[in-house]
Image: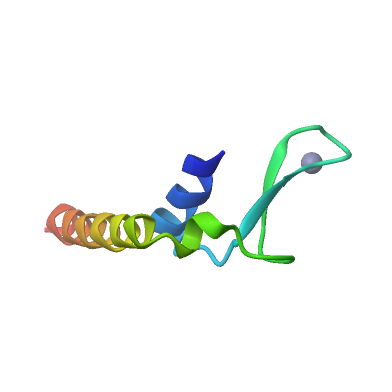
Length: 65
Ligand SMILES: [Zn+2]
């Protein structure tokens, strides 16, 4: 689920700060409420999000041509 949280930031510039197990469906969901997952404060993770967003932007421009 850590990966899903990171990917949501890369792909959708998500504001989700954490994830939780849903009482209704038993699945994990992302949330922007509550406390921030320490994962997102990890410099390595932040670097990765930035790098992969840049890469994604570049690919997006390339595909539009
Ligand atoms: Zn649910």
